[in-house]
Image (cartoon, rainbow, N blue to C red; front, side, top):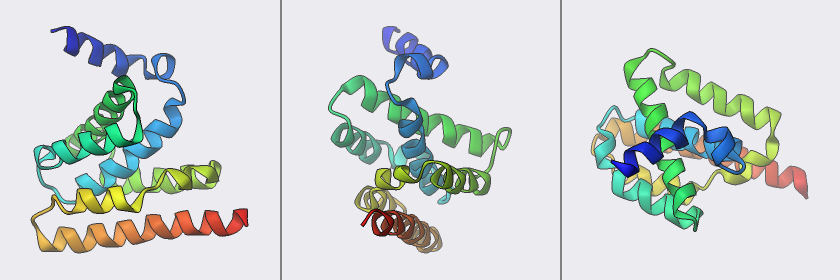
Length: 146
């Protein structure tokens, strides 16, 4: 009960409670795009996503916020009320143009670990292309900074 109340407040007031919420949301979008592209249950990815979140953020509240945000994006994609995976990917690209340093938030190793949870071979191929694309954006930013 207490956890669900806490999750509700994190979700509703993320901008207030979560430091640098926009970079956390960018990460969540990249993970959500990859997971949603498989059209498989989020449950398959849950453990791996939680491990990745705890590796990125040592504070459990921030790690929880990342997982919750990914779930929110996936729910909105699945319901098709807010956006599908393509508009979310376009949003990721737009954010990379507006805030190029977000490219450093792209962790190909984490995306690959999420891809390993996928069973469907066609989905794996598509996810691999997404990972390659996002990694290319990351590498382009690194080259710019040299």
